[in-house]
Amino acid sequence: MIADGDGAGGAALRDKVGLVTGGASGLGRATAFALAAAGAEVVIADVDEAGGRAVAEQVGGHFVRCDVSDLEQNEAMVAFAVERCGGVDIAYLNAGVATGCGIGEDFDLVKYHRANGANLDGVVFGTHAVLPALKARGGGAIVATASLAGLTAVPFDPLYAANKHAVVGLARSLGPALAGDNITYNAICPGFAETKIIAGFRDQLLASGLSIIPAESVAETVLRIVAGGGTGEAWFVQHAREPQPFRFRNVPGPGEGAPSNPRGL
Image 1: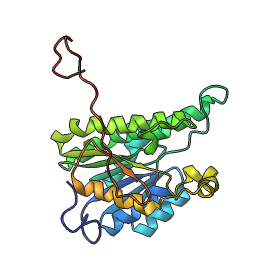
Image 2: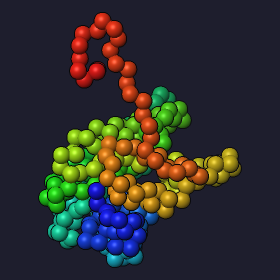
Image 3: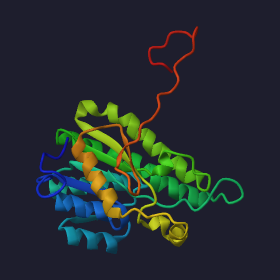
Image 4: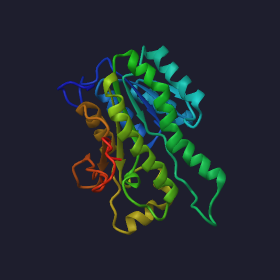
């Protein structure tokens, strides 16, 4: 657990360092402000240098350019945070993009690799890069941005759903795996939230009667996850609902007469 009983505001995260990827806009920007308001020193990472530097200046933090689809840039990002701030306690691996293609006639290899690089590789590489820094501090918290698309079928964008299902699976698996290092690992799964990803169809969402979730609501949930101390969870965020961990059903065990398998697989 990172925060104490002070809650998400005030000095709950005093002397903590928070690293935010995709921090120049949307959920990353809102979470950077929430972390700073809670007392944390914040490092903003993004490919958008102008936007990222502006957010860093506004929260009194630091900016480092990072393309999260590149492992070496992730490692350099963490090295910057450690050198500039002395370490990392919280990593919000948030950078992501819309897919822009499907499977079949509209498949585009360049767009596929771009989406996979940001949405999945960025989480895997960011995790790999930041783990040594968290262990050096005696533990910490990682929250990765997934989506409701990681919890359900998304026929209109199956590749995005595949990316986000993978992030959810990673969080559920790494949560218990990292418990011995005092590191919590969770995913956050918002519905349609105020980000660049919905820019191309935002008006259609509003016209259909759907409510767009404020980025600040997601940011508040990120801090709640960090403070809560749970691990291996996938928290949904939906309009007019209380955010909480999604309840997964257990996989079926072996049937009668099957060879004994203590793992139930």
